[in-house]
Length: 341
Image 1 (cartoon, rainbow, N blue to C red):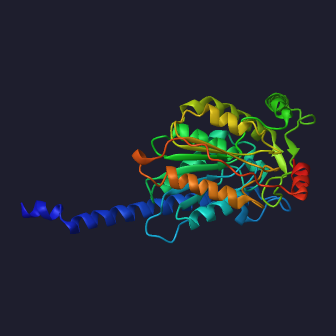
Image 2: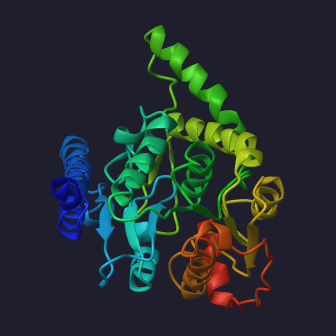
Image 3: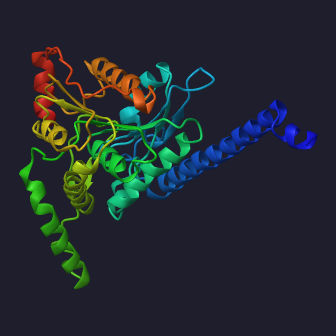
């Protein structure tokens, strides 16, 4: 009897907690090291002199707050043709607010377009799932937050991993894009595949030029095979939106030069979650997670997470549509945004 009591005593419970903490730490270290090795190997294999960005642009990152227990965990996903550095400033803001943050590198990104070209979108999503696994070693309150196509992947994750994640944020995620030519991409990829099979290289069109807002981060060549995956992700996101039931925040730039501004309200309208919020920022560019006005975006994300992730499930607030004060955009910023688009 005394032995059984000892097994249930405070020392035994403390020992079990310590063993669990050590096991989680080992699992976290293994997963993070695996991600870093995968990046370093891909970087060395696909490095293109004069084109591949410095390694700190594409390297995934883990940020931990200065507190014993984080308020929660946030998996951050960057956009198409971009890299983890694109969402680093948002991650640092959330870390200062008390959240553990993992900035994933979507497979094929942060190295060179040749690394991205053969990757199916499911590999991009698998990168997000690994991020969830990493943060689950630190907290049981994990949210997904993505910018641009990372927003679509986060929404897909909310549908596919509803038992593992507690909230989702999409920022300028595309249901529709400004350039209608993207509709032709699947046909062009099909023609390229046919030409490849018959051994004709002369007329193949595998890459198109890209003129991003952040040239120090994004690829300057866009693999058409990857653009085809982008089209597939947008369609899959639209299909699964009604199945998302966890709290969701949708953020959209009012004059987005890349994603059609109707995307945000349409995502919001199709979400199945009873707890969903929509914020429209008055902006004349796509990359609102960097540069002027990004602090307001960060504050909005932090506010939502504090309400829907930090509180216990049974106390999460009902749906609310916040009133967003318009943010003025200067003529100079407007000109830069339009030329970048």
